[in-house]
Length: 178
Image 1: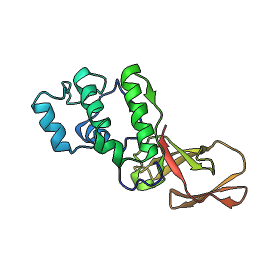
Image 2 (image 1 turned 90 degrees about the horizontal axis):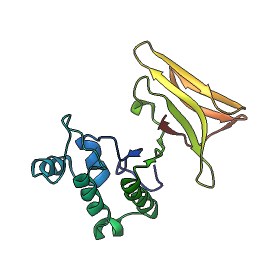
Image 3 (image 1 turned 135 degrees about the vertical axis):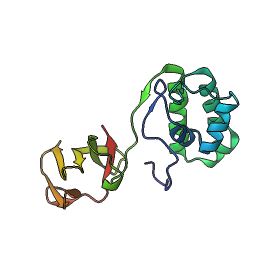
């Protein structure tokens, strides 16, 4: 998550060719879910037969562009958010998939059986991948694969709580769906 953001005002990855549900599209554009539903009903947005909104569809892309270049959004966003917005606008033109944004590690936000990349952010704001991690709540198990040498791990019950690099604790962990 970009520094300074406290609420979820972003999406973790962006693929202009894949459909988003109303909630994710609302998060992407900074509007309410009700506004998305009303825009679909009014024909401003186009949803597919499953109710998914594909960003690259002309009407949907136009809606995103209008929201992203509004004066309110440009003035009220951080440089990191503006950079991400510009990448999303570019992806609407190219169909390029943007890499996911790591979020602060919280095992309760992890979905069962998804593979996550656990990382930390170095002093140059680069995310350094430490391990792959999955939780299987049904059988109360986990799967962890270290990606670099010199790591040790702390667990409480089945949840990863700490990562140490050469016996030094990593201050803040981040997670990204793989």
